[in-house]
Image (cartoon, rainbow, N blue to C red; front, side):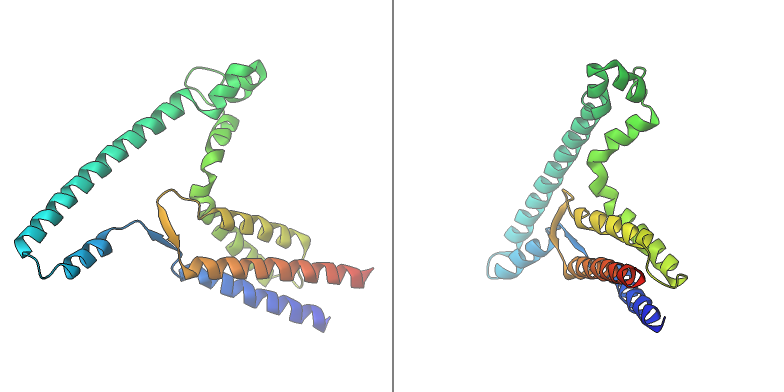
Length: 203
C-alpha cells in the first residue's frame, strides 16, 4: 500500500510541474520590430533622415502588404467555407451525407459543423490539452492510485499538445513548449508503466 501511495505522489508532482510549465514562453510570433531595430543600429553612420524615410516607407509597404494579405486570406476563407467545405463536398457525393451533414442550402447539422472544423483542430488544440491536463490533475489529487481513465486522458492531452504548434503565424518554438512536451511525455510514460506494474502485482 505504501508503494502505491508513493507512486501516486510522484505522479502528482510531475503532473504539477507540467501544469506550471504553461506559464513559460511557448511560441514566438513573426514580429519584425527587432529586425527594424537592428537595421537602425547598424546604419547609424548614414544619414538619419534617410533612415527615417526608408523605415517609414518600409513600414507603409509592410502595412499595406499585410492588409492585402489579410483581405485575401479572409476572402479565400469565406469562399472555402461557402463553396468547398468538407460537409458540402460530402453532401454532393451522397444522399446519406447530405441528410447527416448538409440537409439544406447554407444549413449545417451539428455533425456537419464538427466535420468542417476538424481541419482547424490545431488552432484550439493547446486549449484542449491544458483543460485535459488540469482536470486530470485535479482528479488525480483525489484518487489513491493511477487508473486507466487518467492515462487515457493524459494520452489525449499529449496528442493535442504535440499538434498545437502547427499554426501558420508561428515562427519558432521556445523552451517552454519543449519543456512542457518533455514533461507530458514523461508523465504519460510513467503513469503507463505504473499502471501495468500495479496490474501485474494484482494478478
